[in-house]
Image (cartoon, rainbow, N blue to C red):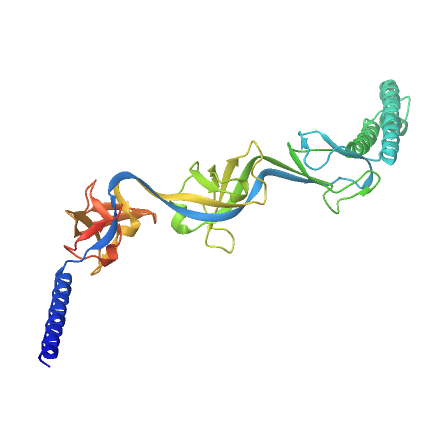
Length: 371
């Protein structure tokens, strides 16, 4: 019985000591100071740009839809899609049979008018000689005034003017006929690449639809619009970065080539045009482009990551780390592009600023910097 009591006492004492030891460990653990894991970045001087992104479609710098000036049967097609053409190259021809006959008829009428004019000139020259003779006879009273007036009328240049008018009219008719003949040969009005051919040999060509389409893609343009807030932040000649994912990962550079001083019709935005060099024809008309306009910039200013700035009690602050302790710095910010922000006041170059974990900090909080 005594042994059982002694064993029970030993067990109780052992349990009591164990519980007492745990309490001390928990108490020691609870008084141990906690820290916040953070990431930092050193403030530095650099250039900062604020960009606004606009979306638009790409167009060729020059394009032409060619329709024949006169309808007719197509006798030859000299181009195909993708072929390069120069200004003046023959694209297709139209049957000339009826037009050639028209030119021959007009030429004959012109030649006849010229011959008639020459005959009229000779007649008038003879009439003027007779007129001079009859003038002397009339002055001598040898012929009547009525007869003299007949000679005067025959010598008048009015007859010559009428003949000349017929020549001029015949000449216009001939030129029109020759022009129609020229219209049967359709040439390219621009340099470029053929983008569409809608005719075949033997078909009828008309003005109902373009027979051939051509685009000059040595340069491409982007027509877009900017708000009244942005229009005075850009200027002619500004170089802009342009992202065209369909044409490659690398950005292209374009130049603002035109800006409207007035808003577009039924709009509150201002049209602008941007040109991009495209010698290798990598950029194709119709592709979507993102235009990055620099609307504000500063050079050689102190910056920190935008995410490091927090608002506390209505003021902008950042946390800097010194001796593994977080300290609050009130700051004054400038322009912010979403990645970095300009610091006007409150931070010096080279200070370690918390960019992750800052929302869990307060003045004097112990921190652990994660590499």
